[in-house]
Image (cartoon, rainbow, N blue to C red; front, side, top):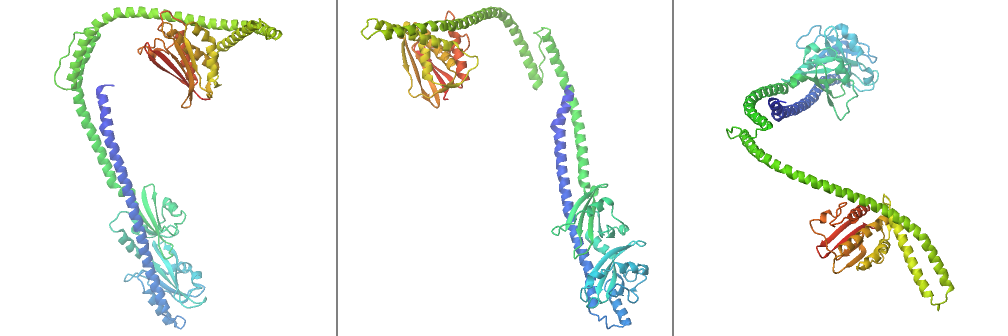
Length: 615
């Protein structure tokens, strides 16, 4: 990828993309907050409008009920009845007709109405009389008293697009009392809706249960049915009494709608609806502005990046030519240094590198000779290691042979021991041969014990079988194999074995090998020492059983102490299997979950401490 492309990607990653991400995140939050505020305002507006509509309708109903309650309808003549109906008719400009009905809902006399709208009173179409009568809630009023009023269902004049609702008032007491019914036209409520909408966006509709628009701030919608998507939301389960208003969003086109039920038991809903694109237009405008700003910024950055990279490429080309010269072996090539920027520092460093390369070439020629010598030495070390490996294999074969020999010796020893014991039974206490036979018995038992220990030691397994082991018993068995050799070399052996020592978790055979390796190392270290003392201690500390093997030998130098557990490492002039002993001991102890610690001073002796977890 070219430098210019990388620079473009860097500018995108470092400037444009973060700015765009932050900008759109802020805009998204602003849009969400604006939408939430619109919803809150819509809900408040829907509730307030519903209360205003309910209050306006209740004023008409209360006026009709109060007026009807003041008149004695049963004693009134026909002329007085007509006058009373006209009184009811004049209670509100929204009343278009008034009619008296009997208890069964049949008309009594002619209705009072105006054929044409005059002085604000709406006109009434006589053909609508039957629809007015059918919408009266007769059953609701039969059990009520005089002056009780009830709202009927709303209906729409399809020819005029005018909506109305019937208001029935009971004119006397008793189930057989007549009713007065008035048609209340709803389109005057549009003044209430427009007043509540004010200068806001969107529109407000008053709809009935059949999802028809009864009144609207857009009069052309009067009498129309709501869109199916909007009706589906209105047909949702009823709103709980504790929540008089709910909001939702409608697609195609996107709109935000809040619905509130008109109070006082009226079966009308107030819909406050606003187009989402219009409501969120400020945020959308800001988004377009941000996009344009980001695009312009990106173009400016591209232009500046092109100028910068062109200047940079010229200076880098000179560095490339110098590198190619070095590749051809022309280490005397130098770059021209100008300016005080990073490229000038690069040129200076490049020239310094050329000087160092020239010096390194000379050193390399000298190192070739040194390397040849070191390779020869490493080859010799490898041959020595190979010889050590052969010796280790010989030791393994010797161990197997020793196991076989011990097994073969063990059987004759058993016969010798048995015959000696039989001879001792035939001798009395004063027999001069009894003491000799007792010595023969002791020597045979000693030989048998040594061969048995040799067998246990030689029967090693590749994988450790960890189990509870008596550490003192293992130490005694191991010493039985080497105690004679130690005393033959003049080593004073001291065993300080702890009483009541808990068992440790280890493999008995492998642990014997560890003890023998440490004792053998100590014996070898004391061969030329004036004082030869070997001390073995066992005990417990911090939940571990421990074994200490301390000698008075030549000690371990600090520079070789870190390597004493490496396989085949030895400081002897002639290699022996001791070089493997400490390595094997370290592996055995660590496999058992323990550790080996070393304390040593040159010409003062060494102390190896083996710690093993308790069983």
